[in-house]
Structures are given as C-alpha cells and as structure tokens.
Length: 301
Figure (tube, rainbow, N blue to C red):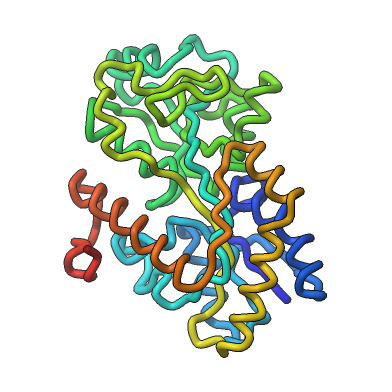
C-alpha cells in the first residue's frame, strides 16, 4: 500500500504519520510505502492520489490546509473528494519559535521590534491554509505585524533554516519544534494560548493580543484519507486497522509527548470534525480579508 505525505520530511505531519505507519502495518498485515510529495500547500500530493485507482492501495496522509483549498483558490477540491479513514490527532499547541540568538524573549519583545522595524524580521511561511499562514492572519487581525515572509515546503526545512539563521521566527506546532526548544537549538517566544505551556509564556501576555482567545482552541491536524469512490468494504477495513493503530499505547505516548491531542476518529465522526474546523478557519480568513473565495459561495456555514 502506498501512502503519500503532503508535506516535507521532518515536519509535524511527516513525524506523526511515520510514527503511525508501523502500527498500521501491524493491524493491516501489509507493508506501507511512504513517500513525500510536497508543494502547493499539499495540493500536489492530494492531486496525485486523485489520479490513482480508488481501490484503497493509495492513501493520502494529509493535513488541515486541504480543507481550505477551495476557499484559498488553490484547487477545485478540498476534502469533499476524499473519505477520512482516520484523523489521528490535533496539534493544538502552537509555538512561536526563533533562532536561538535573537534578542527577543517573548511575544511583546518581538512585536515591539517588528512595529519599530517593519519588514526587517524574516518569518517562515508555508502555503495558504497552513499553521504559519493562519496564526499570522490571527495576529495581523489584532495588531500591526509586518514581517518579510520566506516560503518553505513545511516545518522540516523551516526548522533547519531557523537553526541556521536564514529566517528569524516561525509559528510551528509543538510536535515538530518542542525537542529543538528543549535542546536549546531554537528559542520559544510564546505559545498560542492564554496559558503557559512547559514554561513558555502565552502570546496573550502581549496587551495587543488579549483578544486572541476568540480564535481558540485552534490547531493543525493530520490523518489518513482515500478517494471517496473507494468501495465501502475496503474503507471499513482501513478504518478498523487505523483505529487499532491509533489506540496503540506507544503511538499515543509519542503524540501526547509532543504536545498533540489524540483524536483517533474516522468516517462520519471525522467528517463532522473537518466540517467544523473548515467553517471556523474559512470565516476567520473571510473576516481578515485573506479568503480568495467567499465561504458562503462554497456552502460553508
């Protein structure tokens, strides 16, 4: 069975899915061959899966930006053409991380510098609909936040660039960044919350971001999908196998240790979760003026 990961090696989706794979193989009794197909905020990998037979032998290991493809004008589909085998977890702990040598120690330090020196700070940006894009939209809706945006195909390459000093800051889910923070390779300036996380101060400590919780809780998520036309008996086998894999204590320990919350939901329950997340985020973008297509025109409530 082939499994296509939409994002680059070392990012939060890649880490989560590669950690998932051995337990799914065990449950399925088949080998999973994982490959990374990056680009287009995940559209390249998703489109590849759509071109393959709907027989359950090609899986998409996807993430939340795909729920916004139509809203952002990235593709003429989102998850409407896929069936969710399992939404494994949500990374609802998002960190503002920086190169370890920057002079700022918290969100207010950074805001003061950015507002005094617009466009001077280099910020990691992934495609539309991603964590960096969405959190940047949240911050920008509440206060002036003008940085120079530097695009990368996911968290893995961006973390390397942050460590090398090629970019200064980035909003990254804790699952991909927390070990680097603990090891001193990155500096954490804040967490997207009104409460601290593992000693990291909340972004709401900055007075201009006191209204940030109106967008929360929010986070990236990732899971396994097949083409919607896949036969029901095959979908059922896959749902059962990935549910069993998601219940594995070793996998749960891996995910929860990285600051993610296990969901392990499939089928109708996963579809309802995706629709709710899509609605919240699409209308955030519409309100901030960054949506390319009015969510109402797409029937998103």
